[in-house]
Length: 330
Image 1 (tube, rainbow, N blue to C red):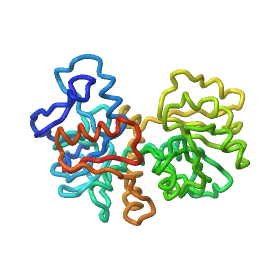
Image 2 (cartoon, rainbow, N blue to C red):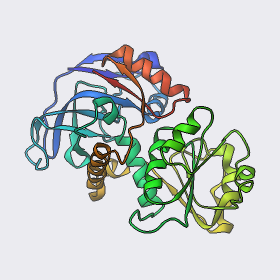
Image 3 (cartoon, rainbow, N blue to C red):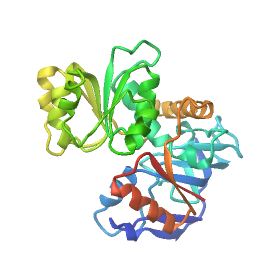
């Protein structure tokens, strides 16, 4: 089978390798990949390669395809079914013709959506779901209308689904975006959109919002750290998917703010019993996409599952100006 991997931190080091098709064991299913989505984690993983690799690093953490084989312990899926998933950081990703994936991390793909509109959604939805329901402890089944969440980088991949899920949970949703992304984010459910290039505190104070209950940091936190510290309510919750390089978490101490990290791969990386929850989140996502409750955030589609397409898509994501998601389909 064809596999695409990096041998060093340069994008041009992406190379094609021919390997044997792996055999599924235990709870693994073998999926013939029909589409992938490019995520910032793909870029970050490549850039963190320190030395020249003899065994190329295969990334890709959104996959869609047909089950062609399954391990002896698989009891949730059948050969021939079409599934989608985000994967496991401790294993090789979806930049290959066939991928092994644990059944607990998988769900049947939407029936009414195209490959390109489906494959963009797993990783960002799992991240947003864990952020909202597990890190912020939001119960979507109660009245949350008195609570406000500020989503910094609302037009990005995770932000574009976090806006939707927060809106569905009944929260007042404030998101940051600029230009043409403003109307797009409003269409996904944001009640208020503010410009992350301008003073966030002033913009909110100008509309009589002094503090917010929750803040999601979905981009570089350092430029906004003073604003985050100022805007979060006492006993509020701040959660992020990015690192703090210069900022100090202890700045939140006087407000007794809850600080939570989110890494979507934690459950599978440490083989936790809770990893089955990701399959459940994706099962609900599939239903919500088919019903139209949740909208796909695919905004760019590149056809041809090959080196050229993967490099082109990666350049777009690496530039950091995308709204929504870019996908590559066979």
